[in-house]
Image (cartoon, rainbow, N blue to C red; front, top):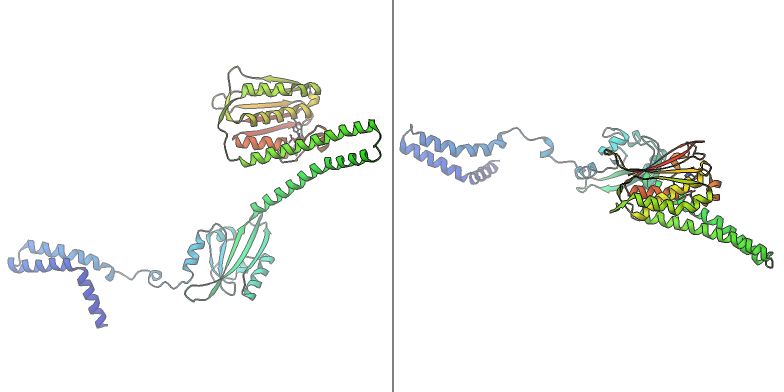
Amino acid sequence: MGKQMGKAVKEWMARHFFSLLMAAAGVAALIAAGTNSWIAVAVMTLAVLPSLAARAPVVAPPPAVETLIDTDPLREVKAAFAGFDSPVYVLDLKANVLYQNPSARHIFGPIDQGQHISVKVRMPVVADMIRDALASGRNGQVEFAGTVPSESVYLVRMVRAEATDGAGAFYVLIFRDISEARRIDRMRSDFVANASHELRTPLASLRGFIETLLGPARNDAKAQERFLNIMLEQVTRMSRLVDDLMSLSRLELKARLAPGDEVDLVPLLGSVTDALSPLAGDLGVDIRLKLPEEPVLVMGDRDELTQVFENLIENACKYGQEGKVVDVTLEPPAKGQAVQVSVVDYGPGIAEEHVPRLTERFYRANVESSRSKKGTGLGLAIVKHILTRHRARLVIKSELGKGSTFTVRF
Ligand code: ADP
């Protein structure tokens, strides 16, 4: 003890050598100038003050316990998981909770340290996995779909780890929300199933006709001509479908890239309407185009915007045929309002329940009518993709028996 004190005094003296020197000078000055000298008192005060200040922590109350004694072997583990945005629990070998990160507290609610994990995690598949992992001493993993607090699919992993200072083993239970990944998987497999189904139908019919041409109709010139025309129609349908699929996949590739050209919608709508006038004529529909005098410029990709209005006007002519008229109106931006183009038909309209789903791939309000009108079920999905890339919106309003309005807002 005495030795230690001696060492501490030596260290202190070394640290405050300058102050001590000044103090000594003060004492010397005091002795030389007599006891009333204020210069000597000032020199001594200046010398001693910093030393007192430097000594202050030693005489101050002892610091908080955790800074003196850092005995928590999981301190770093906890610090690492605190910033995780997935729920994480650190458990002891009996599955009692040693730590719960903020995300776990937020999603599953608070749990006291030392309580068993089953207080919070009651899903049977997860409870079984935890029990097996504890019994075997190995890691575990399970997927479960929960509805509380919201509908989510979680991948739950239980990983065994050792504390670095030999304090023993513990487990980390991590919940990873994979709902989005599962949703995309489901969409992808639905899409592949739908695309295959769409291609399988014309392929099956082609096969049937080829077999007939090779067999019973081998020598029937009239039947051959009729069948070959139907086959041409089916092949055209397949290539339309493949073209639409290619368009969608190209659009997906550049979904985040905003188009950078300035496009005048006035001549663009004029040429789309001209291109569709033969089809409108065949269907007995009159397209009435209302355009402003002045140019209406938007940032866009000319070909893609052409495709948008071709799809909308063609749909209006095909599905609204019985209304006989399709109105296409371009409204220039008025006082901070958006540029908008509306395509209005006066046909049978669309039932309310279909409206929100029309832009889904392969969704049709009426499958038979779409097929008979050479539809692929992809037109509005393409429109939506293009408009998203253009930071524009498609608003659909329809009333049964009165017709439909498709509005594009830039
Ligand atoms: P399709 O290739 O079948 O035309 P779209 O994606 O262009 O596919 O349209 C999806 C469905 O929306 C169509 O099958 C049709 O049922 C419905 N639809 C689209 N436009 C109209 C409209 N103007 N009037 C009534 N129904 C429409």
